[in-house]
Length: 256
Image (cartoon, rainbow, N blue to C red; front, side, top):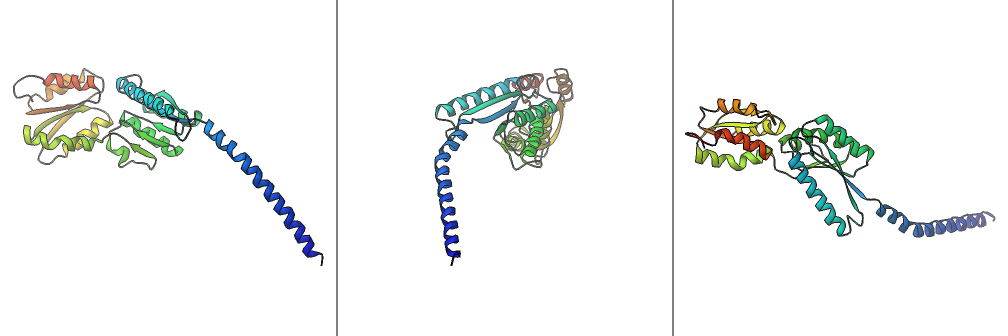
C-alpha cells in the first residue's frame, strides 16, 4: 500500500528537478550562444612576404585584408568577427612554411588555413593541415599533385592547375607555330609539373631546361642550349622571372 505513494513522491521530485533544469537551460542558452558569438573566426595566412614570391604574396595579403574588411562590415560570419593572422612562409623554405603553419594552428588556434603560392610549400602545408584536421585553401600552388595524387580531404584549391595551363594553350601553339618546341621553366615543383604536362602533348617534339629560381646566371646557359630550336616557350612564376626568361629570345632569326 505504501509503494505507490513512494513512487509518486519520486516521480514528483523527478518532475520538479527536470522542470528546474529546463528553466535553467532556457535562461542559460542565450548567454552560451552570445559567448560563442564573441569569439572571432580566425583565418591564418601562411604566404611569402619576402624573397622571390614576395610581390605576389603581398598582393594576396592585400586581397585577404580587403575581404576581411568587407565581411566584418556586413556583420562577420554568422555574427562572428573575422580575424586575419599573417605569417611569412618565405619564398622557398618548406621547413619554415611548415613551422609557421603549425604556429598558426597550435598557438593561434586558427579555424582555417590559407597558403601557399609556392607549390612545394603548399604541398608541405597541406600535409600539416591534414594531420591537424584544419580546413585548408591553396590560393596559388598550381602543381597538380596538391589536389591530385597527394590530395587530402580538407584541402581545396582556388587556382588553376598546371594541366589546365598546358591544355589551354598547347593546341593553339601546335597548330599556329609548329611542333618543335623548347621549354624553359623554373626549377621547383611548379616548373617541373608544368614541364611534365607540356612534354605530354601529342605530336610535339619537346625538349627543355629548368632555370634555377631567381638565378640570372642560369638563364643565358638555358638560352644557349635553345639556340638551335625552332620555337621557344618560357614560363616563369614571377613577372620578373618570366621577363628575364623571355629576354634572350626576344629577337633574332626564326624566334617566335
